[in-house]
Image 1 (cartoon, rainbow, N blue to C red):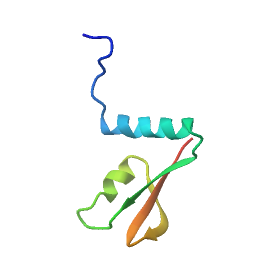
Image 2: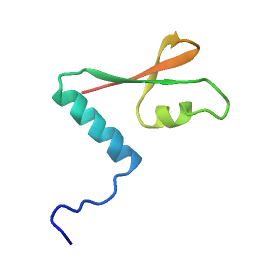
Image 3: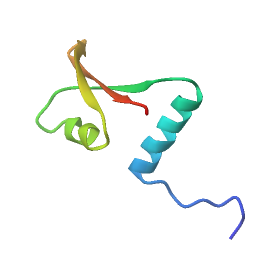
Length: 68
């Protein structure tokens, strides 16, 4: 295998990479927006560590994940 080859990232791996880059840039949190809906992405975001902030923007829930 070529030395540059890397295995595909999982969703958790992608979230971890985003968190690492945000930390490297001095950020303390990352945020997402989602539309509240019975079949929406809220459960996904909760499973990967985001929590609603209690704020909304144009009817969308603002979620954050604190970087430790």
